[in-house]
Length: 240
Ligand SMILES: [Zn+2]
Image (cartoon, rainbow, N blue to C red; front, side, top):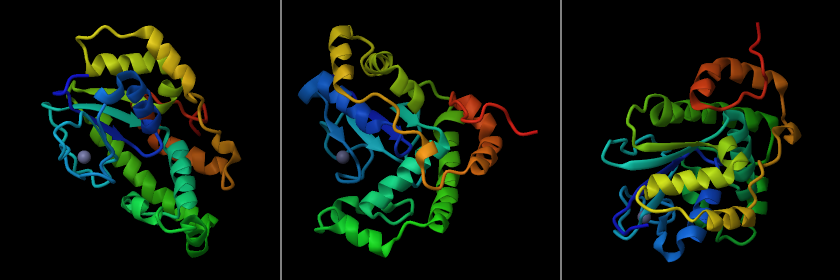
């Protein structure tokens, strides 16, 4: 990975960006220079000129989408992504708003913070519903901006299911997208993928507020978007 490369990894939360970054770090070693934005510079491009991979959730939808830059875009089924995001926020005690992630680094330093947060922000079905609809609005805006309305050919699109089910193929494709001129070391990729957990995270069927009616309502609402995104629906047929 050359020093002049700069990739923007734009990712809906909980869509596999940590797993991808781990694989790329294993592949490129110290040549992979990562900025995770929230705990670093919060600038685009990164304030460190040596950075060549910068993660961004684009919560404010303000990140520039321009033909001169190159992007790896990660996204996921909205309900699966939002369930995972909600559970992550509960675990870390992060308030449920778009900017919640910004506070993570500070809050994690407070001793016993997750247990304090659980008292302050108790989990409840009402809270889940409130959080869900806010995040679904963000999901729609995110996928429209970065995938559906994105007419430039400077982005590698990586839906979560394809990434987790075809790890080797996808890591190889990302490396080729980043460095089209290099010969990919397939043996190394096979080894790297075998070292990491590439299975899908547990099904939302175990989620305490699992609600088939909600899935039906959401999938009917965004079925067209999901087809364009290459995301499989959980329910196979639309309601009549
Ligand atoms: Zn940075």
